[in-house]
Image 1 (cartoon, rainbow, N blue to C red):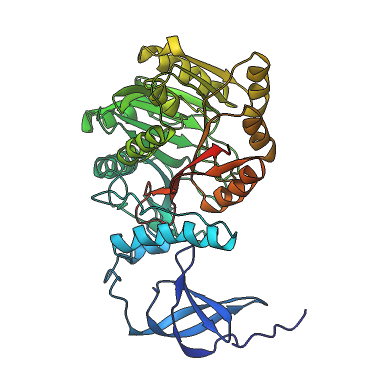
Image 2 (cartoon, rainbow, N blue to C red):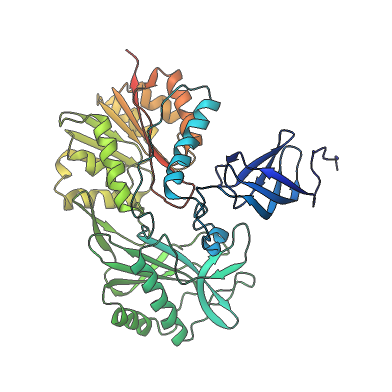
Length: 458
């Protein structure tokens, strides 16, 4: 093994000043230009640390003592939320969190030599209790079934009763379901031995409708006294209109399995987004922060400059949430999504909202459908992209720019892939014409969404 020639040694104790915050919310100090990453520290703080690991290019350390604290520090944040990764920015005041997210994008743009402006982050108040969906692991702790989360980068399970960033009613229902499962002596899943029954409890709640869905995820096909458990859940929580049993018998980190059975109530819940009604199933993709999603979509529509005469393509349409929002302001919207069930849901949602007349949804990859639409003579004025964290493929960027829309509106959930993709759009003759707008969809975490508008160079 090659010797690591770092200016610090493992287990060395030293005083450092924190000069930055990494995208993982770790404080950054430098010793002779060698970065040390230190959890639970903030820029401007002076700390005594102990080096815990060194590599060729950077190291890690832990805090022994705070010599000078940042005025932006939230004193005594609940450590359990920091430990599990539920709220990695919980120790930072909310105004400073918004600045951190703006700076994340600014720094990546600067590194890529892109001279673009970034607006202040669009925040929310209060920045807690916003998640309308919970997927909570269940484990046996000292002989008792518990709900909670795992500590970051480990399999150490931490029982929790309050999840901080989830809708408070969801937390109450999780506790009720936990206690009912205890009453019926339902065994929790054991990851190491791959035995036991209950793996996760999934709860979804409509922000406006207040309808609640509970999904019991089991390793086994059979859930003993399933009907009695479902009945008891609905008795204790009358707002639960759907109780489902999902079976996942695989050794995997994926939460839901392929088979879902109805135990009580109905298969789906409904909710509204900007006045549009959506039906949401156990496996449906639906934005987890409805308050901020409404702001995000409204900003995207505003920046697209829709007047009612435009043709729009939505390249990652999911169940049609943004397609239908845009259909209210456009002449025609074409949506494409690779998941067949999502397209089925999108078509149903279009009918529910009386927007089937000016929307079309297709199953497949966006590149193929763009080529087909282009061959049919369809000329979009706006192309909307809202990709997963891995960003856009080169072929999608090529397909989109070949259609020569006036505008491309890019909703991003990963600043790193956004900046990478903006460089490619530039090579294809498109430029960013408005300041990038960060939107805080996930307060207390390091995640940041953003809206970017690109226009074809004249």
